[in-house]
Length: 458
Image 1 (cartoon, rainbow, N blue to C red):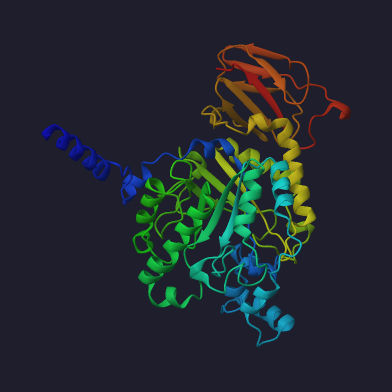
Image 2: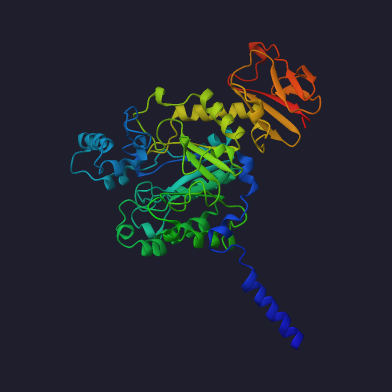
């Protein structure tokens, strides 16, 4: 009898005392490894879509700084006393009248042409491995039926659809991982402005938990953290729940935007934005997972004022993917759909070009890691990734002369991805010289970047 009581006590004590692996402090939260699927994925699609997609306007060519060209900040800008704000307000008054309110746009955010399966098909063909949708931007409008956002969500007004749920199903059915962006703060929410603690306890945390339990995403990408330190947002308390109790505790990944002091320091993977590094110097030089996010143009949300000159070419986007992955990072490339639910054709074209390139050269991107010997082999337009004993040499311009690489112990076999047969190589000591194959237009595997695979290089 005493033995049984002891065993029962030990069992209860173990469950209550040791089952919580992660505690609500940064030392414990930071000890959780970032799931390997994320460090293998390398390429994801960001989606900024909301009420701001109705006016869809920002001065794309004005000299007002990067942030002021974000169309998704429309509501804030029309109320801002700044050079950018004056441009936004002048446009708003001209187009909609001085008495018009931003909230009026919600009824015109209808998504009437939206086909989530078509979106998912484009994302899959792009070669992306994960998708991150703005579930709620700083305007507070949610793309799911959130109880905390009554009559300011996509089911109560506008599309009258659960956009988060419908896209999540389509993306998962396509074999990709689904994630959500979530803004911690809301510009004009009275509760946020007047009682932060009640906002966090009764609005923000319940919303995030609802998002996680409803849709079981593999990414929670927070933002809008800069107004307060992480203790005021109760970030570690939420993350302890996410890692210990949530239905995605094993697979979910988070970023580093959890408080005014956290970017590049605390949380999950580190994030840069339009190559702006927040509170972390040389992010590509540190041994920590990181991700660059940016739009194809100058804005995350759709901006009808962007021209072809504002859009990165397919060549430039592929070069950027190569550079980020070679530096140990990932790329989260944003699209801005229209209010009626269409991905602009030029954005689709860019994504499909990336997908075609990855169809040939993807093994030099997915599941690869940064090569520690890259610094000693710095060359213009030449980048390196590695997987196991294989080394990949990624050339963003077709090489006009042989490529010399040091630090190779064996005489390896070298192939050019997409081309049959081996490439000639000479070895002297630990240095190899790769001969450049004579490729005709007919058998050129790519019009953008070219990859040599060095098998058994180490």
